[in-house]
Image (cartoon, rainbow, N blue to C red; front, side, top):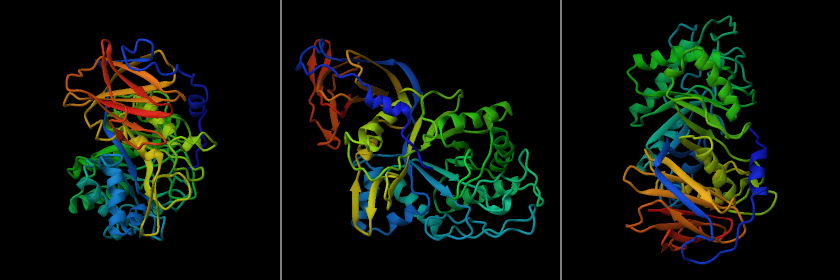
Length: 474
């Protein structure tokens, strides 16, 4: 869906106060101070990721060998973003011209109680099977399969597009009856098909932006209606012996998904889901959900003309790398989310729906947004880490997150939104093993050691250039 820049994002970049100029190395007393408290822990970190749904896996597959490897390494290794989550699309279309995802049950059965007419995964599920293997080989450890819609014959409007509702949920009436069990059976078969080719699906979703009616695959649902299907899907997964957990509900924005979660909670079905999922389009992720479940932001991008910049200073700043660094910071530090997924990782698109742009069989171009994501990739923050307290004094221009990994290392991401270089003192970490820095800005892409740290009597000090993201690892 088309997103506009949120007022919160505009305010973030437009109203940040200008910080003091650098004061050199020393105690850091006259510059900003960042205090890390690893004894104060917040949410667990699950990872970052992307999707290649709607046949963008095919786009990567058609690249020549060198460019294909480049894209996959940029997305899933520490040479690039180091992502560990892949979101696949669970198809519902009757055929698969480019930009559609074909169903594994495209032909309606005789009735809602008849066995579905399953076919093999079309073209390896539009090359998502191939992509899953490539991603797993590079360290991806979580596969999330999400359906944009049930098949048309299971819905009130008879098509997988233009919204409509699943037959059998509250406030629907279909002449063909209740299709909830058939839809659950299809989802189970899809997961089993992936297992048969060596890919475990960790989470499965049955809705995508259920608050919208779109011209492409879509299915509407409120919270009560989502609960009606969860009450069928959960026991069906269990009966099949699957460990896959249910994710819900990929609302188009934070508030849109909270409304669905509230309905599930009121129905008493929250314990039947394993993951709360929402997008960042219609409502910016700006507060925590009231749930004990892990929460992921599972789709977000911008749609303005192509922008490769880290910081452009122009009217495309909503798609700048530094803007996305701030978006990710806010997602973890303000919304207490456990995971973040951009929309497409790589695509042949004319706007900013992807982190990498591909053209033909060889051209690959990298955006500043990819390098922003890299600072929360597995090179720095690993699954099972916990966000820890990071407080900033002396400057309102800095956004800081910190995570403690299970091996005791700590990664700290420092975003300097001002134009000035700031001499920052970092306190509260064990620096006996030393600290390494990684810098990203208009002139550097995850450059190691560019901003060396020096010991002061109050901590370690490093210069953070203006409009930059500097990560510390100690």
